[in-house]
Length: 428
Ligand code: MEV
Image (cartoon, rainbow, N blue to C red; front, side, top):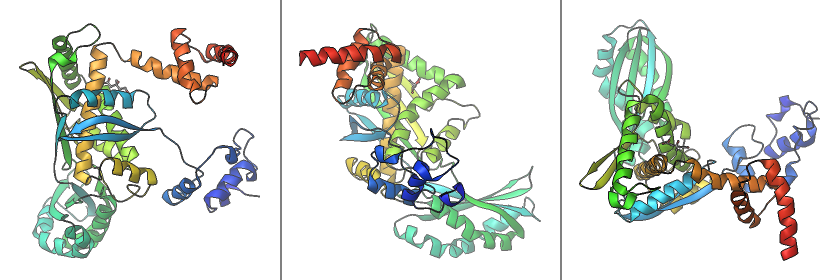
């Protein structure tokens, strides 16, 4: 008989067996017969090697949004998301913008920071000791950075800062991490350099870790669209563009609105991050901190009208990788990178910036024209149809019934589904 104590040490299939029958403390609701859940055997193995105590994997829908034209190239963007209408909205903007030259992007070099914090017998002038030893610190890291240097990345710079309130010396080492997210390398750099920093400063290392700030690793996107193309819900193009510009301005001035505005941008970016196996939390943490870099939280995008053209731009830190961790290792991630034409790290971050801007434009347009609930109703109807029992082709057909009869609740949908299937059976 299995216990929770030995659960951790079992292989994934053993853990699954334990959950269905082996652990006595589980209630009948918690027991699951995994044989009914149709898990893919290969993905079980992938899950087993990706995390500890895996018992399965969570299937999030994967969409292929687009077409987008980004820097003159037509692509479709894989997006993994649980939120209805995100893929449809991005595709709407992608299609519209593609008719007018698409989205243009830029990115910086992928430079990240490893941090070491020292305490003990230190003072503000300890910073100078670190800077004076710059060359020997760099030399000390040669072996650790060899492979990254051979790929064009590696050492960039070092800085030191005295944190007065806690009397701490913070040392930041800048590393170009090329196509990787960089977490492993940066953590190795931080740990490797710790003893030498102790010798140089006379302090003691408290901790050594990368910084997820990533502000030296930004990507930006820019769009332009003739305003005549842009009307909706009774508003002409000029008025729609004016409303979008105003909505974006409000999001720069009102932090409460900015949070939702930026969340909409991240609907696209996080979905691409998840689809490609990237670290969604690292990206989100960095982006939201960037949005508050002037002391108050504000919108990351801007819109303006010039000579009958609506312009939009977005700039944000995007530590996207195309290798390392789950990226390229998870079979879905590999497939998604193939769909994108296997960009390099900065290339993927530029696609992410373009997607974020497209997602934002679609959200703002919907918000200031018809409102977003209208678009959501159709998805709600499809979910209701599924919950009521519809499967396969019946989902769309029954969702149409739900919409046309304005069915709102599960109970109503479920009752109606019974009579609807009887009626369909008679007709066929
Ligand atoms: C919903 O997930 C995203 C929006 O709220 C974004 C926005 O308000 O800009 C529609």
